[in-house]
Amino acid sequence: MFFSKEGFAASTRDLADQLGVRQALLYKYFPSKEALLDEVFEKAFSLHWAMAWSKVLFDQSQSLEDRLTHCYAAQLDTEDGIALRLFLRAALDGLLLPGRRLDLVKEKLVLPVIEELRREANLPGLDAQPLTIGEFELFMVLHSSIIFYAMRTYIYGGPMTEDMRAVVRLYVSTFLKGARAGLPSLHGSEAPASLKLPLPQKYAVA
Image (cartoon, rainbow, N blue to C red; front, side):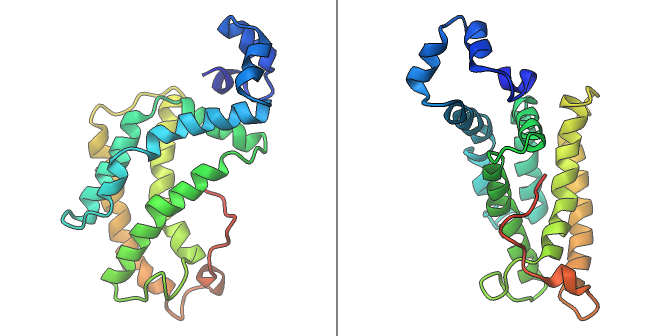
């Protein structure tokens, strides 16, 4: 909470004052400010990614629409704005810590969804052909819309729709209709060569 409000330039002395402890006590548990921030990020983002909902995405007894709706609705249910603010501040400050979240988005969301969409379209699996830039950007149509939905509430101060799950399902169903129609074309001769390139290891994720 402290760094989400004050920013990462805030000193550990100010943090200690707010906690009502001596600065030396913080360094008893954390050898540096960087180690402290590392723990802050670990705690803030583990709420989203350590939950059982992430396993639902691999349960093919449910439709992909139901699974994605469940996962994103569950993520929004745990959002209180703190992790989102921390991530945005860290990214703007040029910190490397958000990289963990980027890797998790790719591992737990992008790869399994694109794998399934490829299978539906009778395209080669990811083991035969790596994730492409075009496929990644296609998925970001959905992911970025969910992130911005949260930003409208926790960053801009706007109201969140009462039936949040209905909004998430709208985003998901709209994405899947477009993705199922557009994914095969990304593998066709008409697709720009730049979108058919393998996704680089370091690539920006919302």
